[in-house]
Amino acid sequence: MEELRAEQIEALEVFGDYNKRLIKSMKNIIPELEGSRKKDTDDYLEGIIKGINWEVGILNGTMTLINEKEERLQKEEINKSIQKLSEALGGRKDNEIAQALKETLPVFEKFGEIAETVLKEEKTKS
Image 1 (spheres, helix red, strand yellow):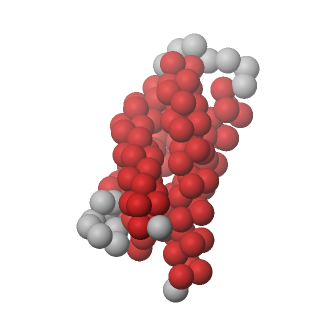
Image 2 (cartoon, one colour; image 1 turned 180 degrees about the vertical axis):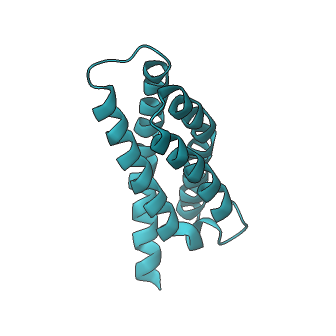
């Protein structure tokens, strides 16, 4: 049990740094999708989507730690946000993808805040 907890804490530490970069990338690509497309926009978007999937995986694996004291993160919130983004990606319309990313952005910002809070609580324990 303690080993799992240690792995979850380590995952949230890595998640925190990565999340900041992912949010920055999401903010950077929105204007590109709204009309300022560049040669590498598709590759950039693909990398962002891989990052989103990675973060969702980390959150799924750390949900018990995140929600240990109180329900801070609801799986439905994650699923709703990802589903909308997935639909926009499937439609392949830049403006719809940009809109879905704008709506998804606050969810990922919240993820980062929650991870930070959980890590601070864990550090005060030790």
